[in-house]
Length: 618
Picture (spheres, rainbow, N blue to C red):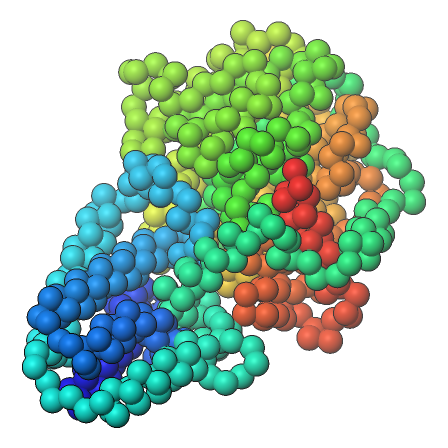
């Protein structure tokens, strides 16, 4: 009977050690970031201490099946039960290793753990492969194989006990069957506290990478899937009654006068929208970035209006598309663009302009199927959609598609075929990993984001070429150019992913149609990409009331605020302070005064509740 108990204890111990082995590999894999962020060794070692309770809870979940097998073996022990136990352990090792390696792969780009949203992307494995550098992809495969084979060997060699004919004692068997389930239940709940254990048990650092490493992969993924399955029945972000949320939203969007500064010389300009993949504000010198990365963008600023307090509401391209074209903010859990039954209820800038006589086109060098962007773009009603496969085969391509210099070069000529006034949008791709642009990499700094800033340098160079060609075209003088990022990206500054700096993006209104007195100026109003709809349509004197989350940034009376969604919470910015709140660990990231008025916290929560509620009800 002692062998039964020892086998149980040894298997439980193995899982805790195995979780820490994958955690150690994650830390070593991202050691360069830990060094760059100058994290103390003692704080790094804290991941192994603060992870214990969540690891133990997860191990207790895993041990439910082995316990049942051992319970049977305490009275009857055929050898095939040992085989079943080993196969089960092997299956868990493989699945958990996949989550561990998956997190290594996505952290550099998304700065998050493996979640329900990430799993949904696996429906397009080819796009996942194309988004990863080839060397990195095969390195992760190798790490996965090493973890699996090493863990299986260690488990069989040092922890698993083959049980055959063991000495049995009826009372011991009864006690084992009675006591162990109770201990497992207490362990998987994280103790006898009223509230079961959750991810907050492992949160301990201001450095996001350490919290990511500390939280158990399987536990986090289980919670993410479980919580999101429940979203079909109720709103997980119901922080207050609907009437209170509606009242707060009404106050947020209240404007004393419905007016706007007219910045344009003409009422019906062409509009060219250039959406920059993953551009952080840190790429722009006049937004606080280092000089020399985007020199052409800086030149454009002299004849445009720079928005220096603009934030992306999400961290994914498909979220950015819904925000820019539909005026719909990003939210946790999922993206509205992946669900046609929901996004068809959104308004559309393209459709408003089309009703007013605008022709339209959309250009992207890659494949729009990722994130279901293609169906959303089609819904918007563009007259012409040109994606990777539609460009001339002679154009050089990288892993993701046609490089920026060629898509921009194609667009500058193609829009001449559009009936004026026209609305033309182009989505760049070269500032997305694997950064395989066909250009030199002159910037020798940037540490972990060296390739990223050089990719931005390349796209900026392409912008310079684009505008040099555009100035020779007949349509140029009557065109308003809007340059904005779809979302931000980790930069050489390595901001915390929950900080407002991480989510800050560039936006520039540019063109000869802008009145001279506004050229070279800066708009300081706090805003988001979803404010583009009301801001642009306000200049064109076209209706924008359907874009109820969009405010006119050129209306002096509109209030100043910005919002962004995290994986499970909200970031809220006011001129006098901001915070980020994560619902999962019930954790506030106080980036300014921790005594920030409760009313401000309620604003952010009401905003998230309202946006997510509309997403669910659409």
